Amino acid sequence: FTSSALVWHAQAVLVAEDSKAQTWADLNNPSFTIAVPQGSVMETYAKRMAPKATVLSFPNNPETVAAFQSGRANAASLFGPALSVLQARM
Image 1: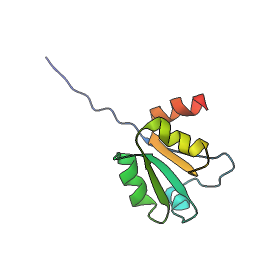
Image 2: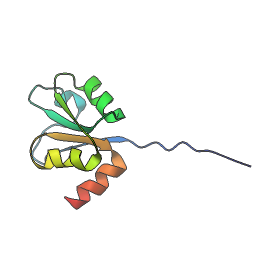
Image 3: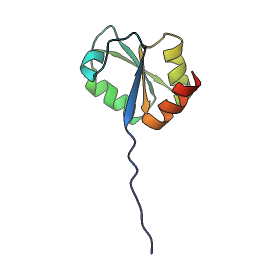
Image 4: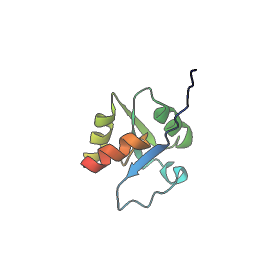
């Protein structure tokens, strides 16, 4: 007997505490820069949902979050579980 299960992880977006952005529509603004992992679903989705924003691609999750922490990006988008772990370390 074999079984397989699909595991769904939500995409999450980290923004600064003082940011008023709460939706993709808020991020769809030329003043926003969104950091994402290169070649990821998050990159594709960010470009689709916020075409007016600048989307910066980074080789991995830690570099994506580092771009946010250093102020190179106003937001970072990752899968929810990964973002939660990295956010806890900030």
